[in-house]
Image 1 (tube, rainbow, N blue to C red):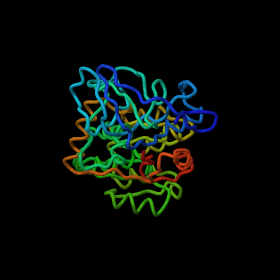
Image 2 (cartoon, helix red, strand yellow; image 1 turned 180 degrees about the vertical axis):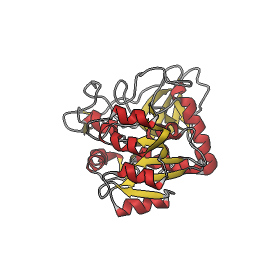
Image 3 (tube, rainbow, N blue to C red; image 1 turned 90 degrees about the vertical axis):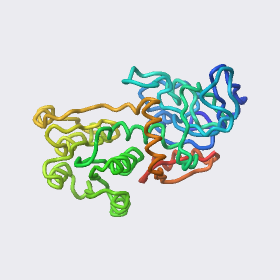
Amino acid sequence: MRTGGGLITSAERPVPSPSAGEVLVRVKASSLNARDLLIVTGRYSVDVPPGRIPLSDGAGVVEAVGDGVSRFRVGDRVAGTFHPTWLYGPFPEWGQLRGTHRDGWLTEYIALDEQSAVAVPDHLTFEEAATLPCAALTAWSAVSGVGPGDALLVQGSGGVSVFALQLARLAGARVLATTSSDDKARRLSALGASDVVDYTSTPEWGARVRALTDGGADRVVEIGGAGTLSQSIDAVAHGGQIALVGNLAAGDGMDVNRFFRRAATLRSISVGSRGDFERMNKVIAQNRLRSVIDRVFPFDQAPEAFAHFEKGPRFGKVVISH
């Protein structure tokens, strides 16, 4: 499927042949992220050519390999990386992302450079594995360094926040969360959140988090951006860190003076490298952690998946099964 006049339209193309160094993957599942909705509705910050196949995240089975491929063989279960050329080390620069510069995963077959794929944990279904490349790895990067004795705050119950909660709990940290409903609060608590603050009844939730933690959260996973950053500054501990992973809520942004008085750090997160992905997968496999999926749609109902994602509310990831 590809972007078109509406959200997405169907199209037929020949099955690609893997070139030297590439693997041909039979796609089994793909998942949606906030950027994907912006792309297909024409609201993304980067121009996307008409007819581009959307979705940056997916997983499947290797069906053929090109000359010189050594990392995978036919039958291997793999997922793609969000940054195809970022293999290790610090973030180099924005590259050719799938769904924008390159065709994405909302298709039956995709050819990948073998360097831009990773093996997925054996205990995960393809639907679960398809949620890892962006949301899980972003959460992994956002909570990196958090451990016992630390307090982490997550916002809401989207894919990144839920993965951050799960991964931080594995690391031994205390996790607090904000949400908008009693049902979501119960589900967040069941995943290990020690305290859940309803941001609708407590709009000044930053002060509430500071009170609950006796001084603030050591790490805040910032999803809303401009619309929630002010409260995150109130919530973060003196000398703590705000991990900026999204900018989904409209607002006025940050008060620099208040931020300065916190002596805090604001760090932008751009998912992670292939090496980060592989390290995360080891932890997921060792602890048999499972992705939290809100709903799975069949491939022929991809437009409905986008509509559901846009409408919300969601708890975890929206997935398309191929």
